[in-house]
Image 1 (cartoon, rainbow, N blue to C red):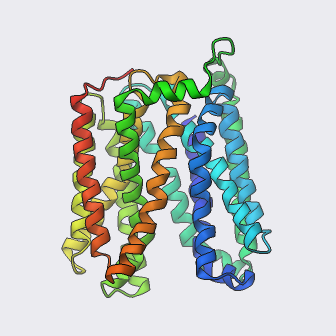
Image 2: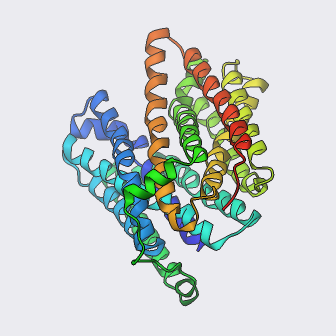
Length: 393
């Protein structure tokens, strides 16, 4: 079950970054400007915000086996349609479709882990599956221009269609695993007689102070993650690196984040969870300060600190969310949908605000200090969760 979740999340990451290394040829072939291409790259997050809560409800109603399969199919369809796009609107629609399939996978995954794993194993399992999108992104970024574009005679459409085929394999691999007799026998029973209306469930969850606080923290976490993920290579180039050098240095947080996500979440048991969450926020603050240093040991330390925070902040916050008293396995899908709907506000806003601050100030310093402030708010949020007497379900 964990492998099936990891594989669908791998396809999620592969598809989400699939356009990034192909921006140049796509813009030339479809006659797109930078502004229209930017709209295309960001449209799926806007769709995601609107779709996350309904998709979370659908997960609770259909069960994870069906819902994740549907989500993986939609992601594969998004990849296929990208390769068939002929203009701005068709490509925009294809990318936006990802925002519907994505929440079914990202909100369904913690529900699967919450059912199949308990205690310390739950944190380790979350840490394992969260490496999926990171490794998918690495595969997409490293193979596209170095291997696949020459292989396909510089035809970007074939590259995107290959990623779609990988996504289709991932969808059916998940269905095969989740349909095994042992998996079906242990599948949570879906109640039909006492189902509450979606709005009632959402309002009941939002009345929980810990849930409201975690939703606010999710905005800060995604603003930090997406803001630095999108601008890190350009930030390094602004410090005097070449494009190639910036690319190599920008892999440091990803590598450190993968290692951290395998080690840190398993330690985030209820008794230590909020201390670990606060510690990760401190690492986030340290990274935004050290990333302003010149190339050298301090910058390496900043990149490593970013990787530690980026790899585990979301996972530990999701653990706290799923195990909040009043959520439970029954409503984990809706809670996950709320989490990602709020988080993607920061995911979309982080890169935009950092870009705007660069235009205003002529550098990334103001944007990095803003991220420092968000990290400090995360430390205060972790302390507040502790004082609320946050307990597990």
